Length: 403
Image 1 (cartoon, helix red, strand yellow):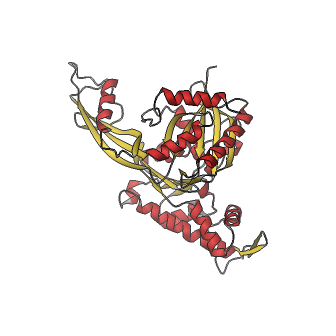
Image 2 (spheres, rainbow, N blue to C red):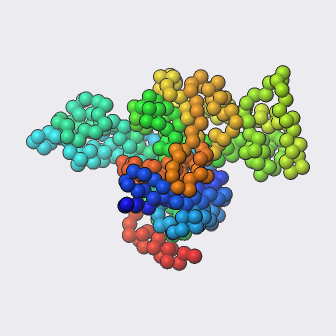
Image 3 (cartoon, rainbow, N blue to C red):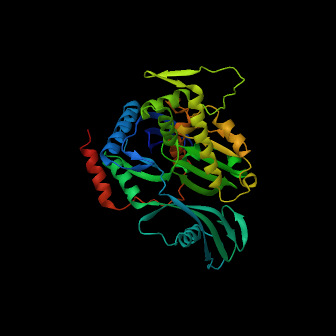
């Protein structure tokens, strides 16, 4: 049985998750090792302290290696942050050969035309994703190879990222002896793990609430329609709790994870435990719930405002799928349905064989999705970090001295 070794590293604001796996029989994944460690040196998806970030990644990689019983040589890396932007662009080429049959080379040519937009020098192309093709004006074509025509058009979704942010992240990873196979915008990866084909076809909005950012990816007609990143997430919820209740940030984070609930408390219903005790503090359950609910309501409204058109019911009839670590708040799906008046569900990663019990949580949607992105051969991307032999040589040198 032929095996292909792959790995994923999700470098988040609050945690680093490394997953090692095998692809066997070309279409099946088996999880071999998982390493999850607290994240330091990152803020809102950006590296702010290279040494701290590198050490966090190193610990996560080592934990996964120890479980898998082998070394990790390269990995797919998730990328997020407010520095990421996207745009839709079209390209068009003529089919000049005598038989007017569209070949693979024509797809490459039309994508090259579509990507020839002016990108600022401080930005780097991350993904160029074909949304649909048209042959002689016939739109809605998913695979034009073999079709006859005189003109081939493509509509693409182009995603760019800040060059310095990409360089800082890849520097941290390469410095511990791990090469970077590809960079993937995190909500695109998460979508692989939590969305169904029907949802992508009808129209769905993926909301990935992390520690530092909330990532959005809108799918329609089985292709990406819109992506964006909001600079509000779990960090802001914890900060509001700390300020509102006059406690430390660490205690506020513990209270949020242990008792977080956005369900309104009815005055005439049975009382929930009226007080929570932590680190010598007595905290009103109702006060904690109210602070969390207000912030989540604001976040949901910002998410709806970010949609590219106002007729939300027509754009995303399948509603919202909320995932990421920030979605682990009791009642968040019910609150989402009440505010948006659309279907809302919690997105958990698909179950995979192997040592994957710890991955059955929305917090690991990106890590699992990175593996599925690779397995599904999402090759319609531009890799901004394949920059020559010198980098490969440096990575090999780091591996030699790795301890």
